[in-house]
Length: 540
Ligand SMILES: Nc1ncnc2c1ncn2[C@@H]1O[C@H](COP(=O)(O)OP(=O)(O)OP(=O)(O)O)[C@@H](O)[C@H]1O
Image (tube, rainbow, N blue to C red; front, top):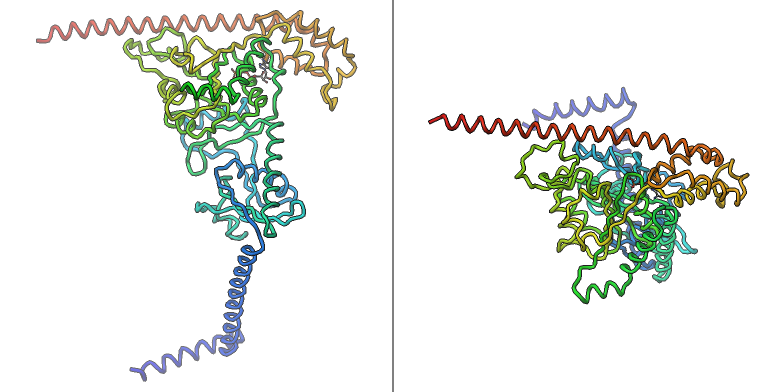
């Protein structure tokens, strides 16, 4: 058997040797030598890597101090913010993670977002950049620091890892990973100082910006407050409505946030919550006021656009993950009609009213029920210490169960602009600011002239005609020409009034049509029922 194989093996070896010799000009001995050297280099490199890793860990263990920060701690985000602004940007890092919102396949859901995807009607969501790092190094106050993101086990971005080290991409930064802050030396004091710096930085940002969080599904399909936008703080003075109501509102919230009030509630077993309803026509400042209040009280704003939430459970999950002190803004709670379907209110839900008088099922939107909303507002699981602001364009359509004291403690009406508010808005629009960046034309208007112009302007803005949004739009279109704004205002008021009257007449006609259609349907159904009854009577 061995003898039989020998020529074949010899033939094979000879053949390979010939091939290498004639084609590649290599003999087998050289090849073997090359392979041996390569193997030795590779194992040497591996050994060196192992040694350096061991040295690295010994070094970390004996010559550094470290502090870990859990994923869900606010400090974690504050560190990332600091690193993002001070290290990543300064070092002009080429590896960042950009994000806007996850793409969802659910068409109803996406439609809701298309309509109103972001705070204050912005359709385009700003891109947020997060530092992509496994480990980042920097020097702070003369000490060498290292921040390490601890992998959470979710791996992706592998496709891109062919170019960069897999470590860098294995765990895409969602901002929810625990961090370890390490510094050179055996003392944790530099780290503590660094953490203070991060907090001061965040504090300053909070003074200048309001953090607005909105509900978004994250990349793993989990609902949560996953989108964050920083909005510049809007001073309360720039939101015009009844000054006494404004002062009362601010006093009310100040009192509520006072630690003594919390103790008072706790001692008497009263749930420590505050609910406010901001209502009025569109463009009267409900959203602007909410933002201004959040800025004034230094609270984060958690925004829920009710019509885009499609199930009670989702709202429940969002409320369950609210921090203890914040403002929750529930926008457009009436948008699809918080009404009993057998109610008398003339609203959108009446359009498809099937006339079933016994149907008392209550709907907030496609799938959010009034019970679901009430449950998150005062259910056992709902967080104490927060302020819930609800906005509505049609307060009269709201269910009484929702607006009872305890759920809504104060109702604030934001209506059409008053002459006094028009004067203030005019002054604000044309007064020169620090950068003198307001308007070119108005620079020539002296202060006393500006006041005279504002008086003349306000005299031509009758109460209860224009919304603040309309007036703001008007002034913005004339931002360089204050005198022209005064001249044109009477005509603008006339035009807008007649337009509003036409719209009202159209709406009245449409409402009458709907009413007629409902009546016809009702009669038809009664007739059909009679016919059915008669037929049933005939049959034995
Ligand atoms: N009372 C107000 N004072 C100053 N500006 C206002 C006021 N109301 C509205 N505006 C301006 O009009 C625009 C729209 O305001 P905002 O979105 O706050 O109104 P809204 O009542 O929430 O409207 P909607 O009911 O449509 O959501 C903003 O740019 C805001 O600056």
